[in-house]
Length: 350
Ligand SMILES: [Zn+2]
Image (tube, rainbow, N blue to C red; front, side, top):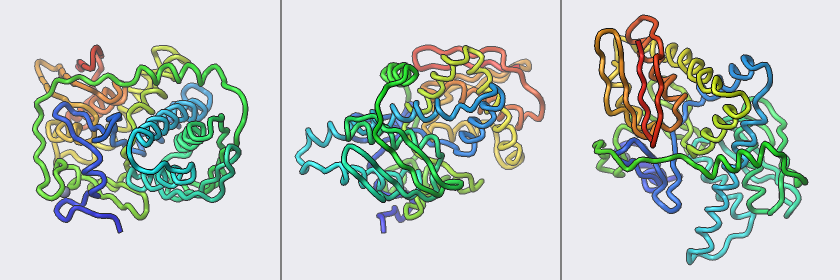
């Protein structure tokens, strides 16, 4: 059994392995301090589906390619840390097993190595997988990093249960190279922030995290206690790369379309909370999820202005706030402007 904080229920590996910074960012405690986000999986899954419907083609391949680069980058830096550290060097099989163990803690699902042939094939048995195209990308990227060969991922299964197979292949499509260069740009993180988290006396993580989320490490799942919705704690870069790829493929409207889809999902979600919560209380939950820090909300003469530092992904955050204002205000709201620069986001609604 994993070690669990007796006070708040957070796995100690999560409390030790991550830092909640005073600027709305969650990042790894150890180099290279990769930024992480608690993602609402229903939102992410529905977003990709509705987006595909609206643009008239399946965007899964963009999701796979975005996550492939993210997975490779993650594994490359993991291997670099291993080489520089004093621990005995791991075999590829041990690295795959370590990643499977991480998956349990990040809520990605239960994953086990079924079959492995060096440089040729990786077969993973999965249960409760968080998102099939995203995980296919993860698996292919990690394979690529360890084997030094491109891997083509395939899926056989139903819902989140099944088998992911990665087979070595040749070629590097143009799309993949573009996503690679986008990933290099990463997510900008501003230093600014004097947000105070009340810490759990048991594990030192902000106490709101364990209060809001229930980790089931054996099942490889994380759920929001109140709504029962499933979440994952995962790299911020992956989704940002996917969003940028969509914008490149479809133009600027892609971001607005994304904000509009998230707005509708968000409105439905927060409608169930009116009377029990408030705009301010909900905004205060954002930093615990690594969504950024909404440091100013101003309502004046029928307009709302919301200022953020370090939004994890601007269209997603804009859509969330938009739907939330509509749900709690019980009326339609218009997004007047969305301005983004240097890790800051200014939103104006009317
Ligand atoms: Zn705790």
